Every structure is written in C-alpha cells, then in structure tokens.
Length: 144
Image 1 (tube, rainbow, N blue to C red):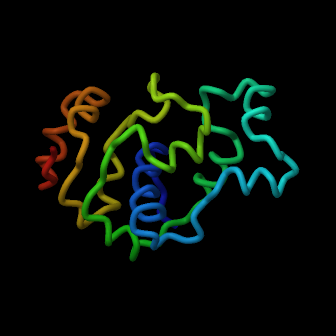
Image 2: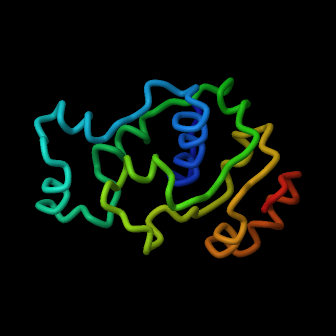
C-alpha cells in the first residue's frame, strides 16, 4: 500500500489518474455514492449538516482508503493545481474556491511519483508552500 502524507497532494494525483487519464477506476461520483446511502438531495444534506466548507466525511473516507498502485503512480508525469478540479467537487460539492481547503501542506509525497516532470500552477503552489519551486527544481521537476 502506498501511503500519502498529504491528503490534498493525493487528491491532485487522483485528479490526474481518475478524471484526466481515466486509468484509476471506477471514477468516484459523490452524488451517486450518497444516493446509494439514501441521500437524494446532496445540497440539502450539505446545508443541513453544516458541511459547506469542508470535505464531506464520506468523500474523505473514500479517497483516504483508495489505494493507488505503484504502476499507476509511475505514469504521472504532470500534476496541475487548479481550483476547478473534478476531485475537489467530488469532495466538497458546494466549495467556492475562496479558502485554503485544498491547499497542499507538504511536498513529502514527491517520491511517490518517480516520473513527475512538470507541476502546473506554480504561483498557487509557491503561495501555499513558500520555497516549493526550489523543492521542485531540486527534484528535477519543472514548474509553470
């Protein structure tokens, strides 16, 4: 089992593999997941439980437990940080992007991606983690 130390870093990897490359299957669909648990109106559920600005516990559990084989991790050559990622909407369906909910907290997981060559969203990354661009460069990863 490959363990990630930063949940939000893992979400970037999931975005790439599950929603862009479609190699990590099945794609997680929070609305379908919640309907299967009897929640027909996800927005009402979120509001009634005060979950507007958080990762829903059901989504967090799914993605925390999700195992990503090393073979798939080795296919990741580019990561992108963008507030519009599908995985963010699957975690927090009414998130508006106006807070730090999905900010990265560390780059300790870079070693899990041996073929990572490019990180897009460098301005946001440097804001989240001052010195991050130097860390990427030290690992031979370009940024833009």
